[in-house]
Amino acid sequence: MIIMYKIGIDVGGYKTLGVVLFNNKIIKKMTTRTETQNKEKFLSDLENLINKLTKKNVEKIGLCLPGYIKNNILKKSPNLKIIENVRFDKKIVIENDANCYALGESVRLNKKNLVGITIGTGVGCGIIINKKIYHGLGNAGELGHTIIKINGRKCTCGNRGCLEEYISTRALERASKKIFGRVFSAFELRKLAEKGNKNSIKIFRKSGTYLGIGLANICNLLNPEIISLGGGLSKNKWLVDSAISEMKKNIYFNEPEIVIGKYESCAIGAANLIK
Ligand SMILES: [Zn+2]
Image (tube, rainbow, N blue to C red; front, side, top):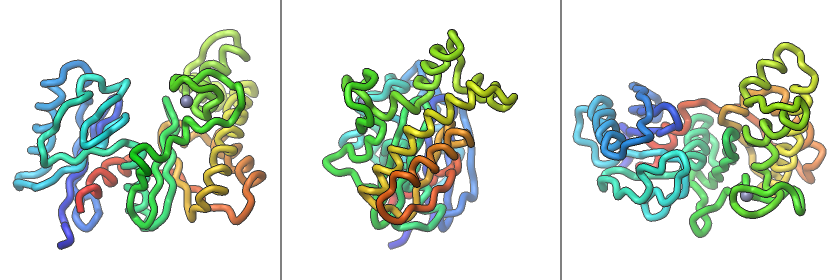
């Protein structure tokens, strides 16, 4: 049986988006502030949001969460510690945010095979093969922790030289300290770049070259038809343009189409966890 109505909820660092899909088109959406301090409030907010989204007694709901998930339990999440190890109601199916993003983009763009990459505080990656999320043994898609520099910077994962240490918001902050002598946030750097500050633009471009190497590695490994970039830094044209040109230099075969994704895709992906 094909389910026509689907509900998906994307829990972001600041806001939570809930959508109702009919034939995979959003027919209703609601946004709330994400509760990050109190577990009971988080769970009651979630229940309230579900009740506002639908009056029907739905069997399953997809929930997109940041972090490491195993057996429908959020095992580790630096930004949502309050719900680590919570056993959700059995009607709720949970999935990692980068995987939801990639699945949502494959639905939105109607592509069977796609790689979705989210760039922001970290680097997430979801691999869609034949319309399904590829999990491997459980954690496929850790692009952010693929090593692009031997003996490079120390990463939060314990290894050295991970991609995430060169293109995330913290990497940009670190680069700003080196160049300007003080730390600028990614947002501040962008404002400077928009005013034509050459050093700021240089930081984004340099960071983009590392992303480009990461993209080329994906292309050479998976030869995807399309790569969708999401997350805050995907809107940065200096970083993305530089990434695409570096990718092109390092691809062995045909290059994929690169698109910038939509914010709603995580919620759409969450809804599509329900089959
Ligand atoms: Zn790492």
